[in-house]
Every structure is written in structure tokens, then in C-alpha cells.
Image (cartoon, rainbow, N blue to C red; front, side, top):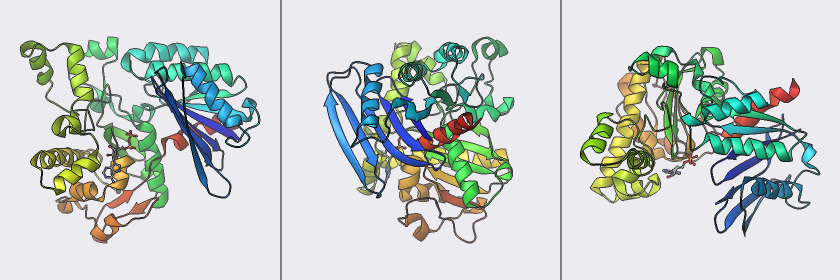
Length: 402
Ligand code: ADP
């Protein structure tokens, strides 16, 4: 059966079509710049003979409904698609960023669920309204398919209260839902399961620290297979230093900027989310370029990388204290999967904590899951490619089989 996974943003829709339960990907792509002068469609087909073909289309696509219709036309196309009718899609799995405290697992979308999602939009004003739009247009087009919402926050709903509460008066939690929720849950969950499987460990006894380093970065403490703490908080701004986000800062910076630098809350929001992190420190948010500048000896790049790595190491130390025994350290996402340099820097100096990698394995060029620790290491060190879309398809499947 076929499951379509959709990730709708404010001006984009990413899609992937899976044959399940076999987990093979048939088609993938994205419509970007929706509503702009020229939108861009990128479409990929994974053919049975193992070849992959890509096409790009530029066109005027005014909104999400028109975008999804274009996607459906591609799915139906005799040469570029792999379905005969929209009814061939048994289920659509939707990425929804914020599930608040209401959703600790995926759900079939009903009117009541949609109402809840709308209520939660205040917690993720940039993401949830776009995710809701994606569900609305998919329900309009795939009238015979079930719609399932899979939440970025859900995996972290197992965090204990002493980890997710902020030390501010209780009423802000009770009346306004102000607490840490955590994000990247689908990715952390996927790589944790993959790592346990790879190590032949029982998931419900598996302890790990999962480090997701992409444009957004977060780190999660996993005890007995579930999330017990994570670095992002109320929104995806907290924790590690990211491409354009500051991560943890002294909260008084915000007060100081508002009071003494005459900055508005919107300006501070923009600054901390879009103009900080690696971009704020170096002018560039692509770590590949910053590493190149580091190698050329540029002091700004050196400082940025030192800060980036230092923050990750601090969290590793903290999470070792949180979970006690650590079976595995997991590196994932764009930087975590591809940068041997960053992995080496993160592990440097952690030998006394039982984390020892080998240079040869770390710099090896295999794709797929692999371990890079030395035989003396107490902790397995794994590189695990993440696949959030596949995890959404996996989490959507039981609703079909039920
Ligand atoms: P997103 O968070 O948008 O899903 P990805 O997980 O794809 O992002 O990660 C994108 C980031 O990965 C980019 O900032 C890019 O600099 C970084 N990246 C990819 N390959 C490498 C590499 N070999 N070395 C360092 N950084 C890399």
C-alpha cells in the first residue's frame, strides 16, 4: 500500500511517497516559493532498476491547494509518477511541528483534532498554521485516504516535569502552557530505534544521547528507549548553537536589548531566530564554508566552531549525568552524518568519560549506519542517517492496519 508523507511549510510543501510496509521510497520532491512570482517544483522518481531521475519545473503556483494538485498530477503522470488514481494513496502522514501536551503520539485527523491543532498554533505560529493548511488541502484532494498527524514534539512527552518546567510561577505553565516541549522528535526517535537495532539492544533498556546537527540542532537524552530531556524548549530556539539560531543565552540579553538598545520584541525575535548562531558569528550559516575558513586560519571561524562544539560537549556531559549509563552517542542530520571534523572535535577530550573514537573509522566514507568508536571506548559512537519522512510513514502505517 502507498503512504504519502507531506511536510507543509508556509511557502513550501515537501512530499515523499512510500510503498509500505516494505519502506521503499517511490517518489519525492518539493514545491517551493509557493505564492511568489515563480514557484519551483523539484520531483524525483526512484525507478525499479535502481536509477533516480529528477525534473525541475518553474511555474506560477498561487497557494497550497494548487501546489498539492500539481504534486498529484506528478504522482499520476505515466512517466514520472507511480499511481493510477488519487485513491491509490491509502494514507497521508503529515508532519505537524507542535502537538503541545495534548498529543504524545500520532493521531488520525478528525474535526476535533483540527480544532486542537488550531488552538496550539499560538505555540508555533510559523509552523502549525502551515501544517494545518497541508492537512486541509490533502483532505480535499485525497478524500478516500486517512490523514494522520505525526508531531515533532510527541517523542519528548515522556520528559519528567522537573526537566520540562521553567522556574517561573506555576500559573504560566497552567494557564499558558509555558514549558519545554522539545522538537526534532521524529528524527531522535528514528535514529534511536535504528541504533538499538544496529547494536542488537532491547529498545526499552537502551540509553543514548542523540545529537541532531542540521540547520536546526538539538540533543536528546534517551533512557530506556524514551526521551527524558532535550535541548530545545518552548520553541526550537533554545539549546545548541544552530545555523541562524542562538540556542541558549542568558535571558537578560532580551531585557537588555529591549530596555537599553531600543529594540522591539519582533526585532529581537528576528535577531535570535534568523541572524544569530553560526550566521551571527561568521556571516554564514553553512558549516562547510565555516570549516573551510577555519582551515585557512580565520579567527572568527575558529571562535564559532569552538563555541558550537563546546556547547554540544557541555550537553553531552549534562546528559551523561541525566541518564547515568550511556550505551551510545548518536550523530545524525546534515552535519552529524557528513562532518568527520565536527564529530572528532565533539569527542576530543571526552576520553575520561569513556567516549573514544577512532580517526580511521570516523573519516571512513561509508553511507548508512556505522560505528566509529575505538575498542577501548565504553560508549558506542554511531553515525545514523536520519529519515524523518520514513518515520512518519512508519508511524502512519498502524492506523491503516488497525
Ligand atoms: P535541515 O535542518 O534543514 O534538515 P540538514 O540536516 O540537511 O538540514 O543539514 C544541513 C546542514 O548540514 C547545512 O548547514 C550544511 O552546512 C551541513 N552540512 C552538510 N554536509 C556537511 C559537511 N560535509 N560538513 C559540514 N557541514 C555539512
